[in-house]
Each structure stands twice: as structure tokens, then as C-alpha cells.
Amino acid sequence: MPKLIPWCSLVPCLMLKLAPALMFALKLTLTLKCTQTSSWAPSLDQVKRISLLGTFRTFPMALVGPYVGLILYLKDMPLGLVGVYYLLVMATGATGQLTGGLLSDRMGRRWVMASGQAASGLMLITMGISLVGSGYWPFAASALIQSFFGSASFSAYNTYVGDLGREKRGLVKSYGLARIGINAGWALGPLVGGFLMGTVGYTFAFILSGGLTLASLALVMQLEELKATSFDLRPLRDTTYALSISPLVLVFAFVAQFGFTLTVFETYYSSLSLTEIGFIYLVNGLTVVALQYPIARALSGRDPIRWIGAGLLLYGVAYAMLPVFKGLAWASLSVFVLTLGEDISTPLIMTVANLLADPSRRGSYMGIYGILSSSARSLGSSVGSALMSGLLDHPLELWGAVDSLGLLAGSAFMGITGGKLRKASGSLKAAPDEG
Image 1 (cartoon, rainbow, N blue to C red):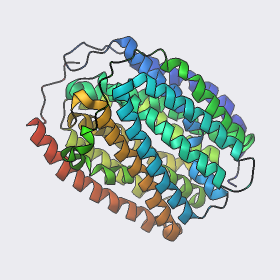
Image 2 (cartoon, helix red, strand yellow):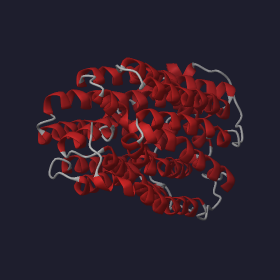
Image 3 (spheres, rainbow, N blue to C red):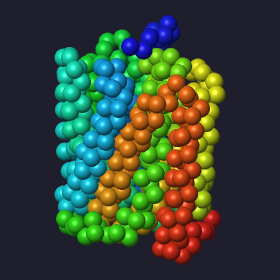
């Protein structure tokens, strides 16, 4: 069991100090001047609601999500079997993403968000209760079911965000603002979750996570329901779209090493406690809250393919930094560099996925995108598990192998997806941003 560090008793004070600053940053970002342009014209009220929902639906999951693989490992599930578990997560998450996307076109975005979130909250509570007994299979099975419903809800959420923006600049800004809300939840969630698990136990942390997820349904029900269209399976047969975004399998597998792989590595290599691991995620979340909107706004009129490549390069630099020195400070600096790459690449990747889709069936297309992203992230955890099985005692080789995957991912994305987008849009160059 990872140790508790002596200063963990200071965490409640730290949270009280950070929470007002976090909410102030979120409020400040949401009240930035939003010039009404043809590419981005949602009401400020809509933006606030979807961003706040991002915060309050993410925080409960962030309490426990980063530690699921680690808990299985600590409950004596072999690393190879953890890799198999993440392959199953890939399947259930992908199915949930597709189901959520298709149903959001037919039943409406809000209905799917609410239904998926309610079921996800109940399964988080079940996961907590399952930890009372011995063995890891009841917990793993509950986690797989939660993955399905959580993925379905998030697919509808992403579709709703896409509905708020039109054209490239609007989409970049919409997803940029949504990520601020999401990462405001991620900023404190892992830190609080690590503290709770180290003091009052895993069961309480998961039950609390489930309860907060259910409570956040109040925000979902305040969203304006966007018009539903029809249950249309034609996007599933759109091989051009599938081929265009196929390199994202490698991209998401690469960026997903910031998760299970980094958590286990730092726990083993630097002997970091759960609270310290939570602090690393705090650095990630606060960096997104502070810098995501300025970066998204600055890049909204730029070549997305080129800048996604720059973001992936920063990921590679950050991964290469991890084995150089041990300790919380160096790991936090590495994650800060990584988060700059995340701030650059993530809104642009989602924008590209939208630009290549048919706007009239956005939910179904975002379901396909969701299948790919969730599957690839789970695949990335499986890849990380496999690499750590043989290279956990060889950190330079471990992260060198990860960066090799990143090089392959970046090359495929810029060649295949970049070519498809240039063909579809004619030109990636846009006029100076008016917003």
C-alpha cells in the first residue's frame, strides 16, 4: 500500500486555499468578452451551464478514476491481467460511446446525459461496496458497467458542446471552454480522492463519488434540450470518416500514458503516495484552468494539424523527462510541460473530428469518435501495462518506447488526417480571429 506522507494532514487546508482561486479562475474565464460572430454564438448562459456541468460531473469521477488500475494492482491483480481489464474497458467504453451518440440524435442530448450519469453514479457506489469483500473481480465487473454508462453520457456531452459552435473557430472555442470546466473538476479531484483513500479508505471515496455524480444531475436538467433528429445508422457505414480519424487510435494510446502508466511508474519509481499522485493531477487541472482558454482562442484561426503535432511533441518531451530525476517536484514539472501539450492538442483534435463529420448527424459521428477515443485510451493503458511488465525497472527504456509510439502517432496523424482535412476544407488558413 503506498505510504501516506507526513504533510497529508495539511491537504484540507490546501483544498480550502485552492478552491476559491479555482472557482475564481473558472468564473473569470466564463465572463470573458464573447463577441458574437458567425462561427461562435452561444449565449453566455449556455456556456456557463455546460462548463459548470463539466466541473461537477468530472470532479466525482476524478476522485477515484485515476486510481482504478492502481487499486486492481494493489489488490494483487497481475499487471498482465490489468492489461486485459483495460481491453475490456475499451470494449465497454466504445459500446457506450456509440450508444450515447446514436441515442443523443434520437432521444436528445440531455436525456442521454441524464440517464447515463444516473446509472454511472449508481455503479460507482456499487464499486465502493464491492471493495469491502476480498478479491478484485466484483470491483472490476462493476467498473466495466460504469464505463459503459459513463461513456454514453460523455458522448452526449461532447455532442452538446459541438452544437454550441459553428465552423472551426467556434468549435475550438466551445471545446476549449468545456475543457476548462472539466479540468476544474480534475484539478482537485485526484488530490482529494488520494487523501480520502489514504485516510478513510477506498469504499468511502467511491460511495462519495457516486453520490456526487447523482447530485450533479440537477445541472443536467437545467440544460436546454437541443432538437433530436432521427436514429440514423448511416454514419456507421461512412468509411471515409473512419479512415480519416483512424490515426487517433495511436494518438490517444500515446497521450493515455498520462494516467495508469504514469501513476504506477511514479508510485514504484519515486515512491510517491496517493496524495502526492493527486498533487500531480492538481498541477494538470490548474494548468488547464489557467491556460486552456487563452491557448484555444489564440489557436482558433490556425492550422490545427500543425499545432496538434506541436502538442504531441510536448507530450514526448514530458515523458522523456520522467526518468531523469525522482521526486514530486520533477514529476510535477514534467506534468506541467505535458499539460501545455494537452491544452494545445485536445480542443483541436475534437475540432478536427467535428469538421470531418456531417453536422446534421453530429451525435452519431461523435459516437464514432468516442468509440475510437475511449478504445484507444484503454488500449494505451494496456500498452503501458505490457511495457511496465518488462521495463518497470528500466525507466529510460520504458519511456523511450512510449515516445516511439508518439512519433508513429504524430506521423500518421499529420499524414492521413491532415491530408483528409486539407482535401475537405481546401485550406486550413483562416482570417484573423474576430472573437
